[in-house]
Figure 1 (cartoon, one colour):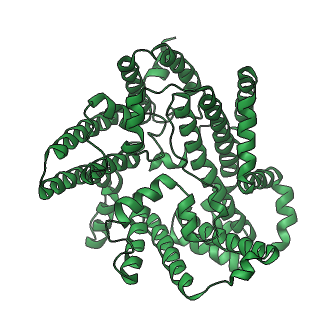
Figure 2 (cartoon, helix red, strand yellow; figure 1 turned 180 degrees about the vertical axis):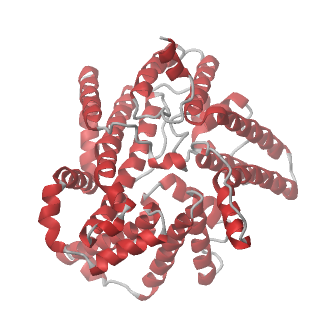
Length: 493
């Protein structure tokens, strides 16, 4: 009994408390029962949710939960101060103080060893990295903190007057570890309303949790552990065809892993009465890199647009400045992901795609008659989607690969050792992988109306039947999950 309590209460670096664990499911059921029992006592309910959120964060980052609390206190105090200052110079100074605090934490926890190693290489000195544990989700809650202060500075929102309200917002556990990047102006009004989940919200939330679990465990984890990781770990051991399939598989894995977390986070929030904006919108249906970044990780893309691209000047200062702003924004977005030059290369690559697409739009126009024609229009859309997917998949290979050398090995295999004739053997040898990839893409490219139809049909079912379907999905998840816990990819960011 004591060992069980220790496992539940104490931090274990090898076993964080995640949505796709049995422990979270059991704890969340108990949490929901208490949450519902406290619905009439708003303050007590808020304190309970904050305590559970801090416990949830402690189980993934140990003592670093005090950093999260420190950011809550800092933001609240600076926000009140900013609201009381009238002159612009003083207001800007307060915002910059908040930025320095948050970016300073990111630099220390995420980039110190990279900068230290780079300096050591330049000066030919020894490199002994510090043992720095990265707090889970630090990039997400620091971005939420910065947007809160900037929105106050822009007078888009008023400073939060209730410390509990702000602490609830910043520590709220569903989006805490891997997003979405929820903004204060969207959530603080909901907190003040003390929302109660409706029957429709509960049904929608359960549906999203089911969808997220299937994406994460049944598709992403399965193709990762049984195929994708092998290719990216040793690309030179495989043919070009297998490397290509590995890159395609990772593109699907990353989407299912990340959007699966977002689905579960949004679904859990709905069960508690809170609604977040969608974070993914079938991104691989995009017909251009520009459209892709309006559909992929929407909360981060819009954050980069509102708080980096537009302040840099956006498209208001000529084409050259716009190109520079796009490139700078994507480089910052790449660096945001972590202390690796591969992320910076990935950001630069995507910046080049956006700049190239803007330039291409100015010189190449498809005649309207071709677009409007059913046959030619469909061919044009399909071609645009395929080209965009190929370009984005190449970028994600940079994102996943451990080094430029591995990218070189993959490219060499694809262009000099492709061997398309092994496709039948590949399908036979990786039958379940091929099925999982095919199902993943079929679900992704299915009309959005199908998903809405399934969601509505699920909502019409009796609650007992909904619970039965959820239990069946949990059984499927248990049968297909890996022997060891597979963390969400974006937990490291």
